[in-house]
Length: 119
Image (cartoon, rainbow, N blue to C red; front, top):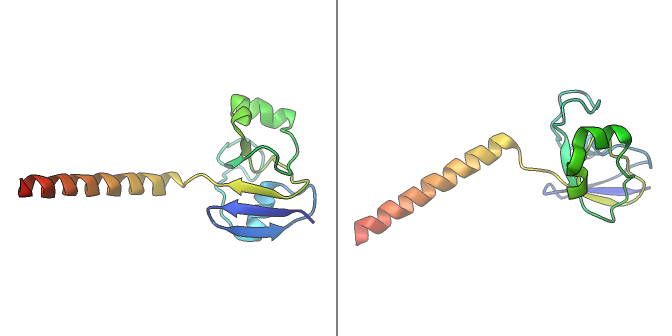
């Protein structure tokens, strides 16, 4: 059985060949955002699958939906089928990314303010 690893969650799951990455993520308890239920219509389940991983090439449907993104190893988890061992990197949740960016900005502003105080 192929093994699928999910980063940054560091979870691995055994799946049957032909399982989609979305199905594998659910089995592993890893949340991948989707709104369409796996029909490739919402494009929310984008993941990074590096070269040489055990997944099928993009289908015509996925290639049509994703365009050049598949050339950058971005795939739709709902359409990408596992045929061997693979490691998948999940993008950062947009809300978490916005919060992280705001916290970093506030930290930088505080450091600048503290530096000005000591000069």
